Image (cartoon, rainbow, N blue to C red; front, side, top):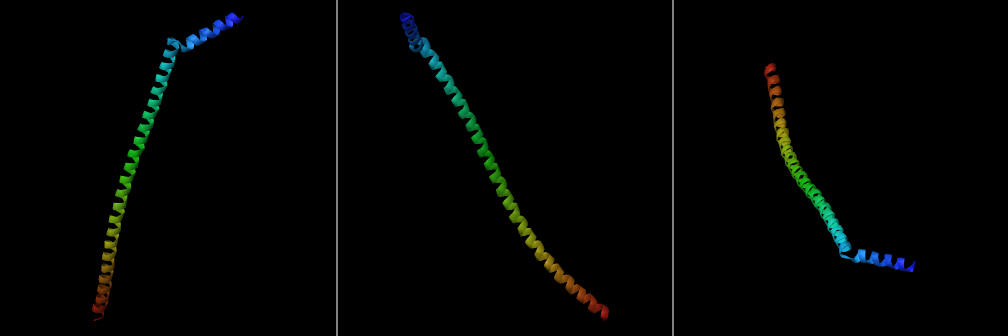
Length: 102
């Protein structure tokens, strides 16, 4: 029984530390490294996509802000014109009433 156990242990050690065992471990480490590289590549692609989206959103936000400022300026101009037209209408109404009474 002791010889069988010794033979089994020696065989296991030989298989584990032999050339076949090292090849197995080497191929396993390469596969794991490739998987890690693939995962890292996917993360990089996702990160780059997020960066591009942020750039696009920042660009849209800037455009929106510029449009808002332009519209605010147009509203101010239109408000001034409406005020001027109100003054003219008031003047014309008063002049019209005056001419009717003559």
